[in-house]
Image 1 (cartoon, rainbow, N blue to C red):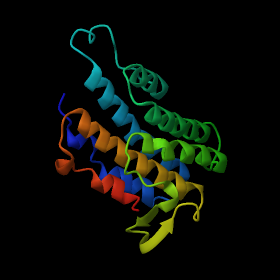
Image 2 (image 1 turned 180 degrees about the vertical axis):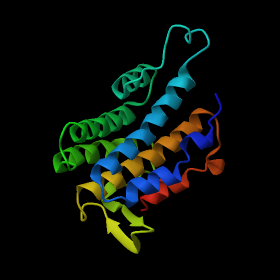
Image 3 (image 1 turned 60 degrees about the vertical axis):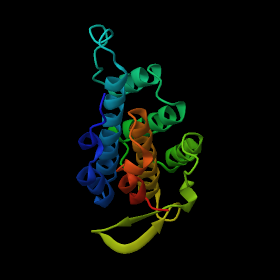
Length: 186
């Protein structure tokens, strides 16, 4: 299957997730972007022979389970699972991202070094918001759970996009994913 960059190149969605002050909006937008990764992976792994017997699940948890069964790397599964935990907590009544859940997300995202040896730990990352706070670098761990969630998920998104490109044979020098990783720059 060809990696269609349009499926992943979502600068408006990612920027909206970053620029909003609404924690629910932030998490839902990131959750949607990650769900698109799961759908791509499932479709990438689904052979013609299996297709009549495997229907794409509607629910996020079932998509994650199927992607894991098809071989999505365990560090990715752990990160995506934790994002879903955070999303579900917000969907069922909480109005803010819990610090302990972001700490668990941080632990899982930092394990992406297992997949990408050039991965910089979250403690060395920052985020710049080009509309709301142009030129201001908000470092990981100093600006609250929402921004830490954003930095962590943007770092994951960048690693996931690079990994997806490798899965379909895109040479590293031709990978157009630096922007996703650079959003939460080092």
